Amino acid sequence: MSEQDQHAASATAPEAYDVVVSGIGMVGAVLAVLLGRAGWSVAMVDPRPGPLDRQRLPLASPAPRVSALTPVSQRLLQVIGAWTDITSRRVTPYTGMQVWDAEGSGEIRFRADQAGVSVLGHIVENDLVLASLEACLDALPQISRFYGQRIVSLAGSDDMREVGLEDGRTLSAPLVVGADGARSPLRELAGIEVSQHDTGHQAVVTTVRTERQHGAVARQAFLPSGPLAFLPLTVDGDSHYCSIVWSTSPEHAQQLCEMPSEALGQAMGTAVDHCLGAVEVLDQAIRFPLSQRHAERYHQPGLALVGDAAHSIHPLAGQGVNLGFLDAAVLAEELLEGRRRGVSPGNIRLLARYERRRRGDNSMMLVMMDGFRRLFGSRHPGITLLRNLGLSGVDRVSLLKRLIMQQATGSRGRLPASCR
Image: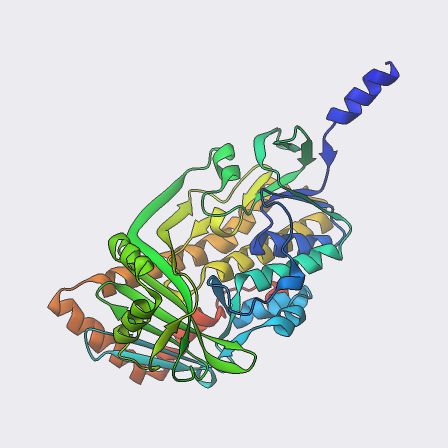
């Protein structure tokens, strides 16, 4: 073979890794760090132009997209070394939750001490979590990131998968993981079908400043239009900030986003009976559609799905990213145990164990959230009465409240070692 032919062959030869991850979001980054810390070579591909500018974060005003991280997610982020950096930027612990029916008298309150924990969770801006995870990726030279690229092809056998990038390069690995969101391109390339339910709602998100301090309490009112959440934020020691998530009809969402800031703040304050006083909107309100999806399977030989690529959930209880983190932790645990036994990362039985450990929990949360959405979306007088009696009844039964809080804090089922 001539020198020119050798160069051409090497230019088209696949770059080999232990795992290829599609998506450099929060869930994909957690998986990559867990594997990278164990010495695995990981390639990550994302259409974003590059990593976040960590020097500009946090912004003066909190970003509108936030997550309610459970204590289980907090432990996972501590294990991989991201939590200290997150807390050095901006994080708001909350110790109470208040949920009520705006059309009746039903109300339930939760406190951290009732669940036997110091906090129920932390509200953190998604960009801050991702920036801290990207810093963890920076510290692991065995992780390669391909920004500004999309995976455009998927091929290979059960023993080795190959993905083609837009620029013509090819990456190979025994396992390819889809962590690329609810509309996962990798899932589509793999031909994995999803069951999808359109909620008929859109989420309106923004950041507000309230007249009264939030008191480290997450509040959610079920309105005729849909649930409205005031999630506590603290900026430079000032606890008058909240992140807003209002789930409502597309028509109402458009109206809210087109309102002047003063009118929107008034509408939000009125909707929750001004429980935090006057509401000042700090950012432009943005909206996005809400659909619930569940992949028919989480795996096939040499391929696995995690996070929103496997399941996307209504933001009613803020469980989406927490479920995704558990997916990543369980998959990493199974992969590392498989390697100790000499099993390939793409082994179908190994990946089936991952799916068995995660599918039941995810399915239960999807059903619960859809049930809550339907229950509180009904305007039938009889159902309104029953749900108010139900809320008030649960508030008086400490054992039932503890079970619900275990769901909310993520302390359920068999947790992976990295989350215990």
